[in-house]
Image 1 (cartoon, rainbow, N blue to C red):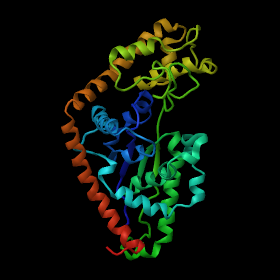
Image 2: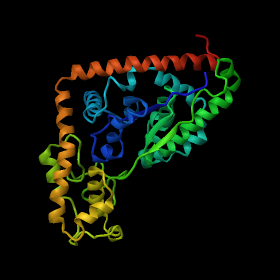
Image 3: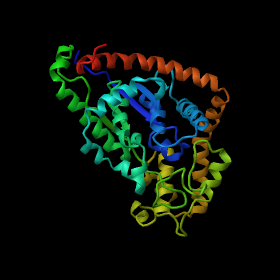
Image 4: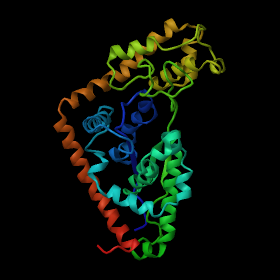
Length: 345
């Protein structure tokens, strides 16, 4: 037993509304990945509760993320879709990894500092240990690939460090367990997202798009209606100058650059190609074209997600089926882990 299956794991937190940045940065890539990998798509609800969540809202958001996966083309028969808390082996392996990871490693995690802010002494222990649970999410399925953005690269590096330390610490036991290479966990490879990775606010091109923005016009939500999508893009902040014909002309124009990159990502073309078509034209011409494209691409996702959420029992059935399939893989991993580390089971 030496070969690792070509398996991809990805998870989305049900802790807020999905927006255009989530879609372009990650979710739209999930369906095509089903052709390359054995895919596991998780709704990471255990991560969500590292900060307070209203229970009824959390339940709705779990279903909404699952429905969005399917509305964007993820096939629950071809891939596994489930919510993390239904597979308790995530928590079990996370505890093992808490005992493998070093405090120094965790102290270097910049995202904890960002999320905890100045009040870090009042942050939950779960938020601090978040990267260890993320490592468990991936390695529970011995995942070989994970799509990551800039904000998750450091966590994936930690996942690789944990896998390597586990393999080194228990090399003799791993070989005795039948893994001739002495490697039980893979060193998971990142799949770096393509263009339009960082979608910025529609009201401030220097800030990343976020649902927590005080202006409701700053963020394009995946559940927005066609009218809302068009309205937000028509009112997006710009400057009085026409679009340039070359990319260099966008260097000091963050709002203009953001809209060009959104168009490019939605149309699956380069920003250069956008400027070839619209260079020299004002936003009076470009914004309606962008709004039309965004409605064409995004409105069907919103409509299909809402259709599925009208029957929550069906979404729950899909999640349960996915959890059953995920649990089978997870328990196989944990049987080996328990034996390797010396538990009696």
